[in-house]
Each structure stands twice: as C-alpha cells, then as structure tokens.
Length: 299
Image 1 (cartoon, rainbow, N blue to C red):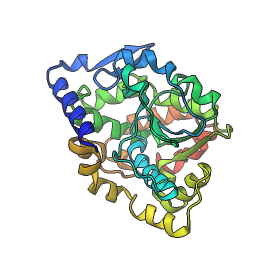
Image 2: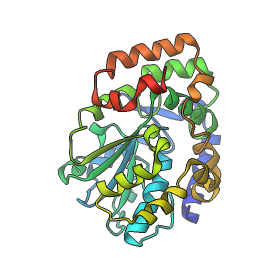
Image 3: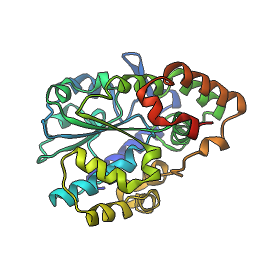
C-alpha cells in the first residue's frame, strides 16, 4: 500500500475510535453502508463517474473473495501490460469522495472495484460495455467471514453475537445489503458478454484455470509460465503472508482463514436449515445457484 493509502486508512481507523458503534453504519436508499468508508456524499456523486470502455471492474458482495481477486488481477495486469501499480488496493468506487472521482486519471486499463449492487453501479459502466469480473461465494461461508470481519474491523460496528449477526445477515441488515438480492440481480446478467461470474470455490479448487479464464476474458495473452507464476503468488496463504505489505494494519482482518466449509464450525442445525430454505426459495433454480454448487459446499 502506498504511504498515502496507509495514512488515509490510519486516519479513518482513528475516526472510528471516537464513534459510537451505532454511528458506524447509516442507511442510503434503504441499504446500510459503513459511515467512515463510504459516507453519503460519496454515494450521491457516483453517477457522475465516467467509465472508459477499457476499464476493468471487479465486483463482489463483501467477503466473497474480493481482496484475494484484487491481488490476482494486479498480477495478471502486471504480467500482461508490464505496468505495476504502487498500491495493491483498487479504487473502490464507493470509497472515493467527490474530489477523488474527478482525479482518477490513471492510464488505461484502469483497475476499479466495488461491492455495490449491480443496479447501483454507475450507468456509464453499462453504456460503455465495461467488462466486469463478478466473484461469488457460497452464502454460509460468506456469512461466517462477514461476521468475523464486522467484529475485527474498527470501522464497522463490533460486539455482535453470532446469533444476532446471523439474523441481520439473513434480513439483509448488513453493510451493502442482502446477499440474496445481490445474487438474484447478477443472475439476471449471467448471459451478458461483458460479465464473467466466477466462484470462490472454483478458484480454490483450480486457481490456475481461473487465472487463465480471467486473463482470456479481459483479452490478456499470457503464456503458461506466466499463468503458473501468477498462480503460485496468488494462493490464499501467499496473499495472507503478504497482507502487511498489501493492506497494512488491516491485512489480518481482511485475510482470515480463506477456507471452504468453515461455516460448519459456526452454524447451528437450525441456522443451517434456515439458510437452506432461503437458498432453495431464491436461488435453487437459477444459473448462479447452480454455479454455487450449494449441495456440495453447504450441506
């Protein structure tokens, strides 16, 4: 992370220490957002953002593998273009204030990211047919990771019990809203040629194939040696070991376990059944639901 990025993050963490827990989130158009990281003025000016047709947009509901894929994409772009960026963190659109949106003058291709629901992504991304890599993860592991993220991240309200957080997640009463609403919205875009959906579980199972597929989607030509080099440097363990350099003081909060199936250490039988029923109702007969392979990873 650049020195400016570290300084900015430390300032925000300091702000959080002087806030009440209930002040760390606010509601905008019915959805909760973290007050410090994306205040209301940021969201109000987002639609002024001017996308470029060759932008690269990484999208994920929180804790679905976003930061892992940031590292992978940085390496792919560096290998393909020779351009290495100083910071490992992408400009997350909703974290940029009005003054920043005007000065994102990075050379093409710009690497951008967001946790926003697809309906809230600035319209110019769709108008310019910007290619979007969308990462999803099974909902049970996502919930567990989000729970620990809340309780270990100073800019989010901490101190929630597992049971209360489970209830809030299932109701969509967490930052960036309902996992299921995000999933249903992206399911409607699965056939868009500008959208590539990939799952956390697929990447854990065969990262090398994932790197190759992602590179091809963005029209980057990489040799097999380059793909292998990226893969070796992009395992979750490698990312976690480098977290202090890439994400400074918050690295260990962002990269926790990275396991598939950790939900079994947290869910009660009743909670597991409740999630099964919600998944069955909303996603069981969808393309994205099939990709998530719920039967394998969540039963």
